[in-house]
Image 1 (cartoon, rainbow over the protein chains, first blue to last red):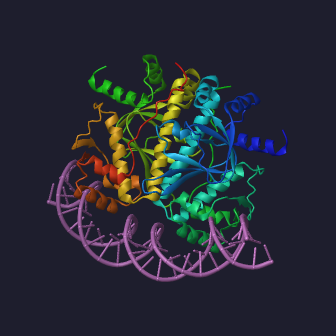
Image 2: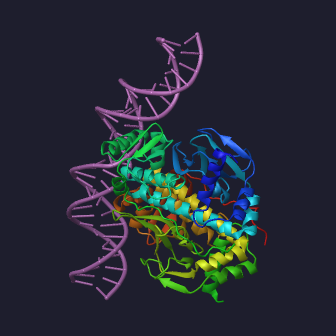
Image 3: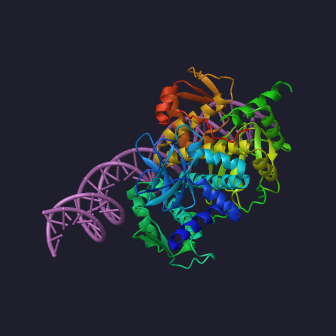
Length: 252
Length: 252
DNA sequence: CGGTCAATTGAATAGAGTCAAGCGTAGTGG
DNA sequence: CCACTACGCTTGACTCTATTCAATTGACCG
């Protein structure tokens, strides 16, 4: 495996082994979950043709979105490599969320049958996927609370803060080396940022301007630079995200 | 088992066997998950003293809430008998949600260790709990989209509609006998309704008044009566909730 | 019969949306 | 190399939903 490829693998694994470290044999089983790999371009809807299937995001950024009766769209969450896409759709007849590609992405499909087999053959990995889903649920609850109760500027700050945390997690930096001026890849237009926090693109612009003027951060050219992480945290009014260290998972 | 008790059991089971019907042996295993049972009064926070544990809600209504830095509170979702409480808290070091009792409730604790054992000993039930969590996630995504994009009246209509669906599910009515004038138990104050849809109590009052004046429904005395279900659905702009019928679950 | 809590109403204010127009940059093709 | 175009960003003006503050009513309880 040459350089770029193993880098992808590393990012995916760093996501899946976030709760407990995985053994080589488990990684082997994980890789056997995947089927055919596909590519999608920015703006594409990530779906198979017939069935609502699930996918492992291998490379690129995606977002799950909900379309409403009035034609508007809410972006629910941003997905990075290592995320499994389409899981919520397993529970309902017509999935309410759609996954769209934010950049060029690469995914490998995971069939429902293999998912079912996995629950039997490797309960430990099943429990980890269960945990990751609970984490997503927690993130959703936080977002819902912010959207329902706080001003738009708070929601924007919180969103950017969580995105940075998630980005940093799959980067080389092990330590919390958040030196001021750290730059993050951010392939989102202001329109999309607005759809993520539930405001119009026009108002999003005003919010970004405000953060820029206050010297908190700057966004340009598909990347974001944090100048004052402490102030950002203040505005967001949330604490850094910390995963649990579960000791109750089924043994290997 | 006498009347009232078996009625409780029936409600709990009707929730857990919503995706596929369970066999007696599986119900037996489920009941072995539970530990000590506790009671809480309206307004109490449902937590064990030391550890963040999970609970099976046996009787009464509860709600999970998120407290924010500014002191405000957002109610995330309403829980009815059969729901498992506290699952999202398994994934993070400090759970962001708190479960509060809306009525007098009865719960039985489920320890993490038993949950872990269950993934090994009964993958089928584990997969069902996984599915239910995905359903919760879908509901959360819908709610987030509504909160972010639509007017408060829409959110109120959608909330009440989903609560009715969920209530009807654990009632005797098998058919869709939603004759106009059907009455549902609704132990929520207008303040709490407001916290659920992200508006102030004052504005909630105006919204309820509007629905009442338009002859859509009426709320009084801890119960709600639907007069025009079709119009309610129109205002809510959502379709009835339908669970999938998964064929990929691990066999018994 | 006062006390607490929920529901209700009114008035003033502000956050955010919509509409509309102008600007910068990148890509495309003659 | 220069139009022509497209898309994203930026700004201003006007509107309206929803908030906060304040005060009143009604119901239930000790």
